[in-house]
Structure formats: C-alpha cells, structure tokens
Amino acid sequence: MMTSTEGSTATTATTKRYNGDMTLESLEFWSWWFNVTVVLLTALLAIAGFFAWKFSSELGTRKDDALSRFQIESSRLIAQANERVAQAEARVAEANKGIEGARRETAVLSREAALSSERTGKLELETETQRKLTAEATERGKQLELELEKTRLELAKLKAPRTLTPEQQERIAHKLRQFSETPFDCFVSQDTEPIDLMLNISDALTRAGWVHKPIEGHAAELNVRGKPAAGLVILTGIEVQIHISRLDDWSKSVHALVAALSEEGIAATLKAFNHKNEHPNAIHIKIGKKP
Image 1 (cartoon, rainbow, N blue to C red):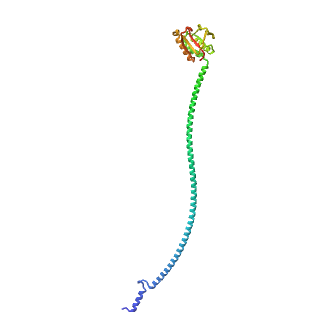
Image 2: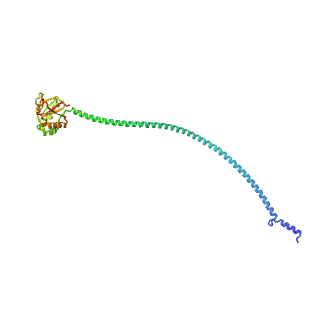
Image 3: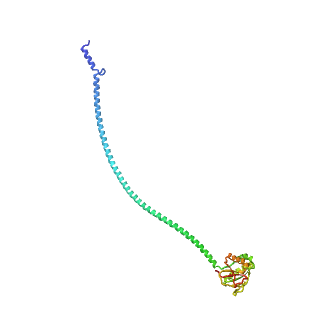
C-alpha cells in the first residue's frame, strides 16, 4: 500500500511533466522565448510600421510633387497646345480666307474662260466663214481671170488682122482641089486688111485649081498685085454669093469654101442671089471690113 509521501512525490513528478513530455522548466524557457519573440516581433512591426509610414509619407510626398509637376507641366503643355491650336486655327482661318478668295478668283477666271471660249468659238466661226468667203472670192477671181483672159484673147483676135498663113492656104487648097475649075471673082473694101485677106484667099483658091476671073459690069475696080480686077464694096465681114441659077453647078463648091474658111478661123456667110445687078458667071467672094 502506498503512503502519503509517496503520493506527493508522485504528484510532483507528474507536475514537472507536460503531457508526459515537457517539464516546467521547459515550458518556462519556451514561454520566455515566445514572449521575447513577441516583443521583438512587436518591435519589428513597429519599426516596419514606422518605415512603412515614412516610406508611404515620402512616396505620397513624391507622388504629390510628381503630380504637381505633372499638373504644372501638363498645364504648360496644354497652354502651349492651346496656343498652337489657336495659331493653327488662325492659320486655318487665314487659309480659308485664301481658299475663299481663290474660289472667287477661280469663279471669275472660269467665267472669263467661258467668255473667252465663247469668243474663241465665234472667232473660229468667223475665221472659217472668212476662209470660205476668201476661197469663194479666190475661185471667183480665178474664174474672172479666165474669163478676162478669154476676153483678152477674143479682143486680141478681134483686133488682129484676118490672115491666112501659107500652111492654112495649103490646107484650104487641099480641101477645095476636088472642085477645081470653079470660077470666082472678088469684091473688097478699100482697106489694107480686107485687101490682104483677099490676096490670101485668091492664092489658096488658085492653088486648088479654081479660076480667078475679073469682075464683070462693075464700075468701081481695084487692081492689086497683078490679080484680076476686083470690085469695090462697102461691107462688114465676108459673104460668098452664088446665083440661084448655078446652084446645081457650084452648090457643093461654095459650101466647101465656107467650111474651109471657117475651119481656119475666117468667118463667112453663104448667100444665094437672083438680082440682075450681079452676073451669074462666077462665085462672088465679097470681103468687107472686119466686124
């Protein structure tokens, strides 16, 4: 059986252990260290809080300074930007004025260009009309020149004396040679040009074998270059006359004579007569003044 002393000892032994593992001294030791640790941690937290507050305060101050500087710089930049915007707006306004002025000038120039184009069109039309008129006038001028030249030639022909060259006389003789032995006499105006032409015609007919006879029963006579006597006549142009009683004999001869003279440019008319003043024994070639 256990005594009371043994019971106390047992209780003390039990008290010195903690849960059967730690003694009281161990608990006090660890309690002290935990308390020290708490104090140290508290001190560290205080120090950390102090530095946190200090850094936070410094950061806030710096942020405030940075914000202030940012605001000041921003205000300055905004002011500069506003100034540049104002200047740009002024330049834009000035440019708009210039553009508006340019538009007005362009409109004026466009109107002037339209008027100029219209005037140019009218001038081109007038120029084309004038060109056509000039061309027509030139053509009329050419036609007038041709007509004038033709008139000059005709006038020169009218003024030129009627004559037959030896070649023309030979051509006439060749055409009339088939009517050889045809008798003829001549009547002429008393002028150089008709007389010379009479001699040309007489030579051509003589070459053709025609017989040049002196006039009969005519008071006024003209003797030229050994030719048979010719009668004087007042006449314009040339007439080839034949008595109607001799048409069967010499009709072809007189027609051939008139045609041959015409082909050489000597106009002559053919007439048949039946009056007693002219004898029927020959063809009468009457050469008057040039028409």
